[in-house]
Length: 406
Ligand code: BGC
Image 1 (cartoon, rainbow, N blue to C red):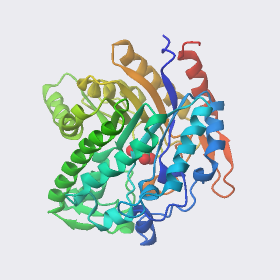
Image 2 (image 1 turned 90 degrees about the vertical axis):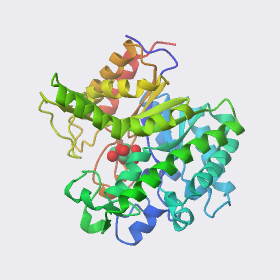
Image 3 (image 1 turned 180 degrees about the horizontal axis):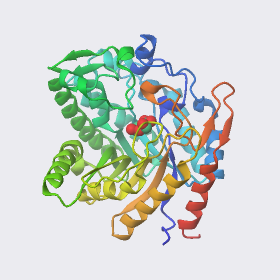
């Protein structure tokens, strides 16, 4: 089995998690308020991106997914910062010079402070504001790209911000107190406001996110029709054994967490990005070991996640899939198994066009700070030295093994 020459292999990052020096967004404000850990200079990727892309190339990648920091581009409502736009143009150029296809995400969780001050995604005007930014970026970057992703994991953003309450704006739906989501940090630090009514605000936010994506789709297309517009969705792959009750329960959850959102944006997506971390099986559950995040390690479940998303018959690129593994003892196995899952889906006719590991380098894992190590490249946060992990070389071999030779 070989993937065609235009199959893309690489890794992903997100602006706030790696760049450093971003102070005018909601997460930076939350850190100043002591509700999430400080991000500070992070990996200083903003200044060291060329060095990082050299490493990605050296690791055999031919693509890279990254995000643009909205707060840098539009520090005040309607005012765009040309110097920052030029920065991201330089980033795209640096990728292309090295033969890495850029996958650009316009928004990955962090929001400009002015936008949040006006109510963030609770504000009925939020979709328009987002589309204005998306249109501007399409106009500025469109000629250099063949696609743009509007947003990353909108349901995770809304769920952790308005139901769970451990991410900005720290609103917690009262029934959720009993559940723990392992990647959301400690409640004593985030100090959420707890109310039953936050559920209704959550619904409003989800609706505004859907509208924002749709309007952004129009805004991007009106600048450049050639741009393929996508949305990156976190898919939990639900599975069940023979038991009809388990099957029903799996499909109820699949509908709630995956399709209730997807079916409302599918018409305005030319392709989808898939972020895969969780496989959940009801009945006859194998005993999976857990990662440093406390998540079950079931990489082959990416096959089920791809099948879930393929319902919409749009090409899919794996936009994230990876493991927190501080001593690099499971990562190589994990990557190999996940690639096997992708191959299985591909051979069954699912149109998969690329595979981005999360993440190129260790980074700021949101409310958990810098402790979790997802990187193919290890970062020493004191010296900012980069060090390639052995599993990154295994990924390189797998890329060579499964790619058609030019
Ligand atoms: C997010 C990343 C995050 C990763 C690991 C994804 O949900 O897009 O920002 O670091 O998962 O938790």
